[in-house]
Length: 594
Image 1: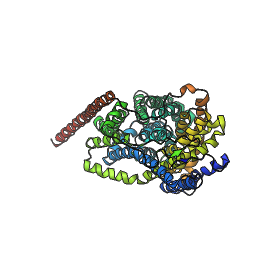
Image 2: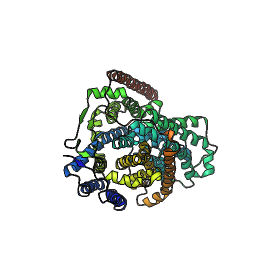
Image 3: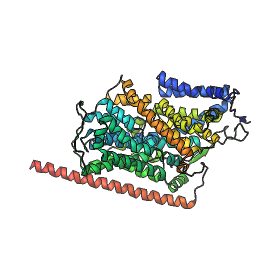
């Protein structure tokens, strides 16, 4: 028996939309006002959404529960699987002590506070956002800056603002992957659209940060560094998002920005050395004490991760891995059970458990391969993995719940109701579109969760108005990044990292104005993309089930063989560099004994 969606259950679209939005109002109230934990707020939101779907929209209870289950499964796999792999890889570098090498290496490059802010808050923070996401970049970068002698408020504030540029591609592209899962627009199309918007912010932010720290005149003194930092990041963010996909823009752009700035500083130095007038005591040693071999060894897990994620993003490699293992199944009782308001069936994709070709598996394998490189046993690695699961247990519940809410809202018709109301803003809707993403990130602290909440709504609203949906779906991700710096979770992380617990309001006041300024820039860019510079919109086809050709599969296995050779080469480089160092240490000890 089929059930037909309702679009306007109260026969007054504005009132119906208001009621349909109550679960969203609730999560806002729970997080922002009641300061409820994210997983509790998310679970209660799902419960309220199910009640509204059943009572107000007349959705059968079994369909409501199955829709929520379907969404929760997508939240767990591939989204949470990717996050677990990324955080695990980061955690093994910390556990092995290699992350201390990376931190001290970064701190040793320059003593100028303006340049340290660019290097650590912007470039290194973006790299960390791409590798781990979920607050780690803010906490690590801000703590490093305080250790170097930064004013704590400025350290946290500029790290929050700098984190704007990379958030949409954070945690190996998780927000874009989520937007694709919810809207059915291909990941590559969303990646390309976001990658044609955010690089404009990426060029501006370095200059913005240095002005906040030192003022306009002192910023001009380091203008070459600002230009090199921002332009190199923006170029590689654009290139990788448009040609490689959503998983590596932050990692590649962050590394490119770091390397570009290091090369510049080898041949150019500012005329004056700038520091804060009153600085806390420096606690991080800025004298470089590491050899090239030690530095390469410390970075090796991230190098391997980058190579593997690039390989996993290639279509032939996906085809080869899927030929060895993939499970597809429809949710029993849900397939073909829901009709749209016009009587046509609602297409519900089967759940794909592509356990080999998902990026999360690439991250896990990269971390396992890296264990011997960084001096950890596999037993220690297993302990770190279990600790990572424990660390992420509440974020996992939150993400599964939020995606479950997104699916019940879509399948019940609640999203369509809100979309029709939003479509009443007419030609102005693209201007307001990024504000939904901003609101979602402010509420949840996560661009991934914001995309789960609103991307289907963005898609439906754009389609109603005749606008290309990729513009508004991408605007949700791009607008969301500007809300990260003022979300309660981010403020709490930043405050804790620099010892400002209890002074969160000071940090919020520091960042809130900049959040609105950057949001306005994204709103203007989005309405221009929708109506004026439409040539910027990528050409794409909606996601369809694809059949892999045999030639693609054989090519994929060849690529995997090349990948194995590349990893062996990296291993040999690390071994040789560190073996030479070991010989030097032995000779030094021997000469001292003599």
